Image (cartoon, rainbow, N blue to C red):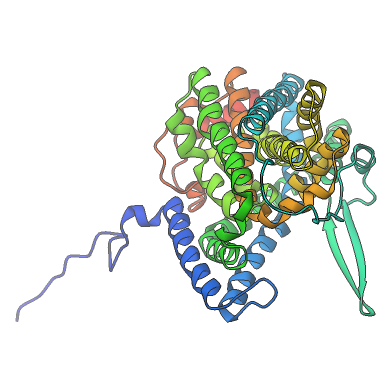
Length: 473
């Protein structure tokens, strides 16, 4: 009798396996972009419109909106628990005030650079001249308001929630929304109070830390299905708007994207290199968040991934990142609050034949640097533009001219916003000597959540140093 023995297959090597690059989060997003583009074109050329979508158009719209809803649902508990946790972690940090000041200072510096680029492009390219479109467009949406920003800092309830009821044909519909800036204020107040209470607050802080860990795990699941959401979001954008909606506003669209490209691929790399860091490592580290921002068109929705890449890829200490990144997601918007309002305000002035003087250009810069926080929790770019136009005394009707192509512009604007929101914490951490450069320079595997896959796995490169930086800053 012969005895046959079989050699067991190596662990993890059984059956069909995808190539390693196919498992990369970045590759999956790019593949989803291509699939979404194809499905969107099919939907568009089979008669799907915004008012009357066909079956494919409806499916894409549902997938995209459902994914954004999932992201936004997790944002409120994430911001609250992350900020409270970060403030509690600052008990052992001696330079917390200096970190906060430097963060706000670099927010302002990069916003100023971005708005100056926007003004230069507006003057050079003349996007509002000779458009050939009528002046019939109206705008009746929400406008930016300095006083509303100041009063909006005071929460109306503990959760920062608001409700709006509209009546159409005798049917009342109530929509619930949240004010991100108010949630940030509440979380900061609770975190500081917990520090002041001291030992009695330990059970609360432990519960908050546990809740944060659970929320982050749920967010990992949501992020992992981002390629599915990407198919719906891009497919719906192509089906509803298409690239032909650019039309006579092509010069304006080109001006915006040139400005965004200059900030993302010129200004940011110069800042990275001037601080002795690798440009390649910066882009490879932040790219997963930039990709998700481009398709989701939401800085807040991308916040979980932005914070994760800042910590895991760029080496920003967790205690500092959990403060700086949520703050940046509400106030740091180089795309929406700097490039866009600068070019758009000049477009509106040129369209209506209004000559801007040097003082008005200074006002554009001032509003862009100081006003981005006034758009927190709202449709940032549109409200920021109305704030700029109101400050300059330009017609708000000009906003209506640009709404048709706003979704196309918003993809690029949000991508730049998120790239900046991850960059500034890395720069400040480097300047303060708390950046984990081993982690920053570590090889990328395409998955910013890879070290969450197995809690018992060996910590990633730089983990111990990052934890030490969290404790000592």
